[in-house]
Image (cartoon, rainbow, N blue to C red; front, side, top):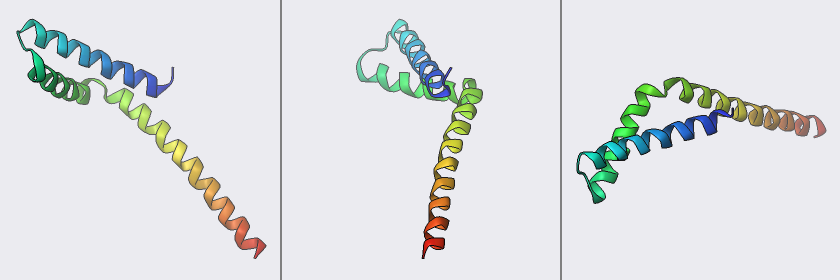
Length: 81
């Protein structure tokens, strides 16, 4: 599966879990939302390291290809001049 989709679904899952736990503990309103996002962010740093690495590798590969194309076009323009 696409690393972006995997990572995004995992983050949304963690958010849903932390919101659910906060709701069970009686949190409501903005406090629930703030602590839900904070908790899911902290958990994702620990639990989703592998998915984040895969996503980072995919993104860096994408930009490396773009840079290679730009370099090739620049060299081509230099030869044409």
